[in-house]
Amino acid sequence: MSTSNVPDWPRDVCSTGQREAAVSVDGKDRREIMLVRVKVEKIEHIKTIKLQHFCAGLAHHGGQLYITTNTALHVYDMADGKGMKMYSDGRKVGINVNKCAVSPDGCRIYITSTTHNQLITLNKDGTMLSTLTHPELQCPITPHVTAQGHVFVTCYDRGTVVQVTENNNHQTVTTLAGENNGLTKPVSLCFNSNYSLVVGLLNNNNIVELKLK
Image (cartoon, rainbow, N blue to C red; front, top):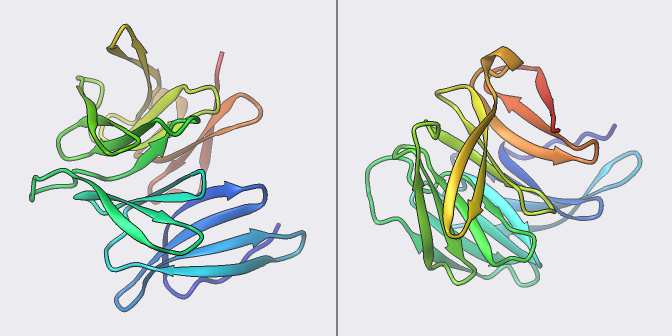
Protein backbone atom coordinates (compact mmCIF):
# COMPACT_ATOMS: atom_id res chain seq x y z
CA MET A 1 0.00 0.00 0.00
CA SER A 2 1.23 3.50 -0.88
CA THR A 3 0.12 6.80 0.67
CA SER A 4 0.84 10.43 -0.08
CA ASN A 5 -0.10 13.74 1.53
CA VAL A 6 -1.87 16.37 -0.54
CA PRO A 7 -1.76 20.14 0.12
CA ASP A 8 -5.48 20.50 0.86
CA TRP A 9 -8.80 18.66 0.88
CA PRO A 10 -8.81 15.83 -1.75
CA ARG A 11 -12.37 15.99 -3.10
CA ASP A 12 -12.41 13.39 -5.91
CA VAL A 13 -10.15 10.94 -7.75
CA CYS A 14 -10.24 9.05 -11.04
CA SER A 15 -7.98 6.70 -12.94
CA THR A 16 -6.19 8.21 -15.96
CA GLY A 17 -4.28 5.14 -17.10
CA GLN A 18 -2.36 2.16 -15.84
CA ARG A 19 -1.11 3.07 -12.34
CA GLU A 20 -1.94 6.75 -12.90
CA ALA A 21 -4.67 8.92 -11.44
CA ALA A 22 -5.98 12.47 -11.14
CA VAL A 23 -6.86 13.92 -7.72
CA SER A 24 -8.87 17.11 -7.26
CA VAL A 25 -7.65 19.34 -4.43
CA ASP A 26 -9.97 22.04 -3.15
CA GLY A 27 -9.26 24.47 -0.33
CA LYS A 28 -9.55 28.09 0.68
CA ASP A 29 -6.59 29.24 -1.41
CA ARG A 30 -5.97 26.23 -3.65
CA ARG A 31 -7.98 24.67 -6.46
CA GLU A 32 -6.12 22.24 -8.66
CA ILE A 33 -5.86 18.76 -10.17
CA MET A 34 -2.84 16.69 -9.17
CA LEU A 35 -1.75 14.04 -11.66
CA VAL A 36 0.04 11.18 -9.91
CA ARG A 37 1.68 7.85 -10.70
CA VAL A 38 1.42 4.91 -8.31
CA LYS A 39 4.67 3.01 -7.81
CA VAL A 40 5.40 -0.02 -5.67
CA GLU A 41 6.30 1.89 -2.54
CA LYS A 42 5.24 5.46 -3.22
CA ILE A 43 2.92 7.80 -5.10
CA GLU A 44 4.81 10.11 -7.47
CA HIS A 45 3.51 13.59 -8.35
CA ILE A 46 3.64 14.11 -12.14
CA LYS A 47 2.14 17.57 -12.69
CA THR A 48 -0.51 20.01 -11.47
CA ILE A 49 -3.35 21.61 -13.42
CA LYS A 50 -4.59 24.86 -11.87
CA LEU A 51 -8.32 25.53 -11.76
CA GLN A 52 -10.26 28.79 -11.58
CA HIS A 53 -13.39 27.12 -10.26
CA PHE A 54 -14.69 24.63 -7.73
CA CYS A 55 -14.35 20.89 -8.45
CA ALA A 56 -17.23 18.68 -7.36
CA GLY A 57 -16.59 15.67 -9.60
CA LEU A 58 -13.86 14.27 -11.82
CA ALA A 59 -13.73 11.79 -14.72
CA HIS A 60 -11.26 10.92 -17.49
CA HIS A 61 -11.38 9.74 -21.08
CA GLY A 62 -8.82 9.89 -23.88
CA GLY A 63 -6.45 12.38 -22.28
CA GLN A 64 -9.28 14.69 -21.26
CA LEU A 65 -10.39 15.48 -17.71
CA TYR A 66 -14.10 16.18 -17.16
CA ILE A 67 -14.72 18.37 -14.12
CA THR A 68 -18.06 19.31 -12.60
CA THR A 69 -18.61 22.44 -10.50
CA ASN A 70 -22.19 21.90 -9.21
CA THR A 71 -23.48 24.22 -11.98
CA ALA A 72 -21.38 23.35 -15.05
CA LEU A 73 -19.18 20.75 -16.73
CA HIS A 74 -15.67 21.70 -17.86
CA VAL A 75 -13.22 19.69 -19.95
CA TYR A 76 -9.44 20.03 -19.60
CA ASP A 77 -6.64 18.70 -21.80
CA MET A 78 -4.16 16.82 -19.64
CA ALA A 79 -1.25 17.63 -21.96
CA ASP A 80 -1.43 21.43 -21.89
CA GLY A 81 -3.80 22.02 -18.96
CA LYS A 82 -6.16 24.18 -21.03
CA GLY A 83 -9.85 23.98 -20.22
CA MET A 84 -13.25 25.14 -21.42
CA LYS A 85 -16.83 25.07 -20.22
CA MET A 86 -18.65 22.24 -21.98
CA TYR A 87 -22.12 22.40 -20.46
CA SER A 88 -24.01 24.66 -18.08
CA ASP A 89 -27.23 23.73 -16.37
CA GLY A 90 -28.53 27.29 -16.22
CA ARG A 91 -30.29 26.83 -12.89
CA LYS A 92 -28.58 28.97 -10.27
CA VAL A 93 -30.09 27.25 -7.22
CA GLY A 94 -29.02 23.80 -6.05
CA ILE A 95 -26.46 21.15 -6.95
CA ASN A 96 -27.30 20.71 -10.62
CA VAL A 97 -24.07 19.28 -12.10
CA ASN A 98 -22.66 17.20 -9.27
CA LYS A 99 -20.66 14.17 -10.48
CA CYS A 100 -19.93 12.80 -13.96
CA ALA A 101 -18.92 9.64 -15.83
CA VAL A 102 -17.92 9.00 -19.45
CA SER A 103 -18.87 6.01 -21.61
CA PRO A 104 -16.03 3.77 -22.87
CA ASP A 105 -16.23 5.21 -26.40
CA GLY A 106 -16.36 8.80 -25.11
CA CYS A 107 -19.63 9.49 -26.92
CA ARG A 108 -21.79 9.90 -23.83
CA ILE A 109 -21.27 11.83 -20.63
CA TYR A 110 -23.51 11.19 -17.64
CA ILE A 111 -23.97 13.84 -14.96
CA THR A 112 -26.12 13.88 -11.84
CA SER A 113 -28.40 16.76 -10.92
CA THR A 114 -28.63 15.97 -7.22
CA THR A 115 -31.05 18.72 -6.22
CA HIS A 116 -33.47 17.94 -9.04
CA ASN A 117 -33.17 14.11 -8.83
CA GLN A 118 -32.06 13.69 -12.44
CA LEU A 119 -29.50 11.82 -14.52
CA ILE A 120 -28.55 13.93 -17.54
CA THR A 121 -26.91 12.43 -20.63
CA LEU A 122 -24.77 14.59 -22.95
CA ASN A 123 -23.01 13.78 -26.19
CA LYS A 124 -19.27 14.35 -26.58
CA ASP A 125 -19.88 17.96 -27.67
CA GLY A 126 -21.88 18.76 -24.53
CA THR A 127 -25.30 18.71 -26.19
CA MET A 128 -28.04 17.28 -23.98
CA LEU A 129 -29.37 13.94 -25.21
CA SER A 130 -31.76 13.10 -22.39
CA THR A 131 -32.86 13.97 -18.87
CA LEU A 132 -34.00 11.04 -16.75
CA THR A 133 -36.33 11.58 -13.79
CA HIS A 134 -37.50 8.52 -11.85
CA PRO A 135 -38.92 7.81 -8.35
CA GLU A 136 -35.85 5.67 -7.58
CA LEU A 137 -33.45 8.50 -8.48
CA GLN A 138 -33.62 10.29 -5.15
CA CYS A 139 -30.62 12.55 -4.55
CA PRO A 140 -28.36 10.85 -7.13
CA ILE A 141 -24.70 11.46 -6.39
CA THR A 142 -22.18 9.39 -8.38
CA PRO A 143 -22.70 7.82 -11.82
CA HIS A 144 -20.33 5.09 -12.98
CA VAL A 145 -19.96 3.45 -16.40
CA THR A 146 -18.23 0.08 -16.74
CA ALA A 147 -16.00 -0.95 -19.64
CA GLN A 148 -19.01 -2.81 -21.03
CA GLY A 149 -21.12 0.39 -20.97
CA HIS A 150 -23.34 -0.48 -18.00
CA VAL A 151 -24.49 2.61 -16.08
CA PHE A 152 -24.88 2.64 -12.28
CA VAL A 153 -25.77 5.48 -9.91
CA THR A 154 -25.63 5.92 -6.12
CA CYS A 155 -28.78 7.47 -4.62
CA TYR A 156 -27.98 9.16 -1.33
CA ASP A 157 -31.45 9.72 0.13
CA ARG A 158 -32.77 6.23 -0.58
CA GLY A 159 -29.50 4.52 0.36
CA THR A 160 -29.47 2.58 -2.91
CA VAL A 161 -27.47 1.76 -6.01
CA VAL A 162 -29.47 1.64 -9.24
CA GLN A 163 -28.73 0.53 -12.78
CA VAL A 164 -29.88 2.61 -15.73
CA THR A 165 -30.44 0.76 -19.01
CA GLU A 166 -31.51 2.11 -22.39
CA ASN A 167 -33.46 0.33 -25.07
CA ASN A 168 -34.91 2.02 -28.15
CA ASN A 169 -34.24 5.46 -26.62
CA HIS A 170 -36.18 4.50 -23.47
CA GLN A 171 -34.32 4.48 -20.13
CA THR A 172 -35.33 2.21 -17.27
CA VAL A 173 -34.13 2.21 -13.65
CA THR A 174 -33.57 -0.94 -11.59
CA THR A 175 -32.62 -0.89 -7.90
CA LEU A 176 -29.76 -3.32 -7.27
CA ALA A 177 -29.11 -2.85 -3.56
CA GLY A 178 -30.28 -0.83 -0.57
CA GLU A 179 -29.98 -0.47 3.19
CA ASN A 180 -30.42 -4.21 3.70
CA ASN A 181 -27.09 -4.59 1.84
CA GLY A 182 -25.36 -2.23 4.27
CA LEU A 183 -25.80 0.91 2.20
CA THR A 184 -26.20 4.06 4.29
CA LYS A 185 -25.65 7.40 2.53
CA PRO A 186 -23.77 5.93 -0.49
CA VAL A 187 -21.70 8.60 -2.23
CA SER A 188 -18.96 6.93 -4.33
CA LEU A 189 -18.94 4.01 -6.71
CA CYS A 190 -16.60 1.97 -8.89
CA PHE A 191 -16.53 -1.38 -10.69
CA ASN A 192 -13.75 -3.90 -10.07
CA SER A 193 -12.37 -6.93 -11.87
CA ASN A 194 -14.29 -9.34 -9.59
CA TYR A 195 -17.49 -8.26 -11.36
CA SER A 196 -18.71 -6.33 -8.36
CA LEU A 197 -19.46 -2.74 -7.42
CA VAL A 198 -17.49 -1.10 -4.62
CA VAL A 199 -19.51 1.57 -2.79
CA GLY A 200 -18.17 4.26 -0.47
CA LEU A 201 -20.38 5.64 2.32
CA LEU A 202 -20.47 9.13 3.80
CA ASN A 203 -18.79 9.52 7.22
CA ASN A 204 -18.09 5.79 7.33
CA ASN A 205 -14.76 3.96 7.33
CA ASN A 206 -16.29 0.90 5.69
CA ILE A 207 -16.85 0.18 2.01
CA VAL A 208 -19.48 -2.21 0.62
CA GLU A 209 -18.86 -4.69 -2.18
CA LEU A 210 -21.92 -5.65 -4.22
CA LYS A 211 -21.56 -8.80 -6.30
CA LEU A 212 -23.28 -8.53 -9.68
CA LYS A 213 -25.05 -11.51 -11.18
